[in-house]
Length: 74
Image 1 (tube, rainbow, N blue to C red):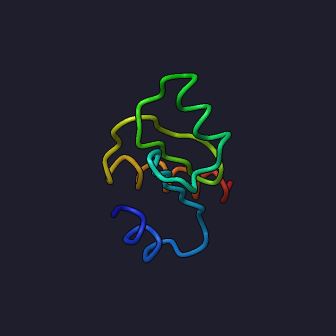
Image 2 (image 1 turned 180 degrees about the vertical axis):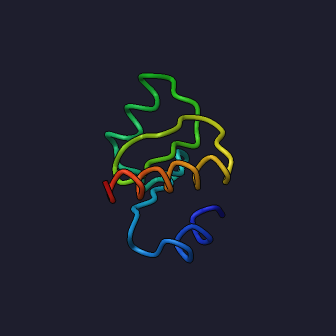
Image 3 (image 1 turned 90 degrees about the horizontal axis):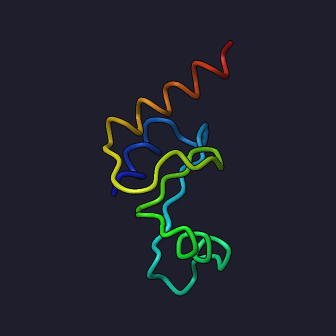
């Protein structure tokens, strides 16, 4: 899973969410959004903001996380 290496590198400094669309415990609003918009998954959220729908590589996620940290420092 991609989340564990990111968490080991960034800790709690960034919120990373993974949603399993097939899971029974997924929030109904998220499931409804995915189904109504026919979004590809997985969905990737960083700090509550959707950054990707569909495939995203580990490299791309790290680049986005680094960008968030750079913006926070400015």
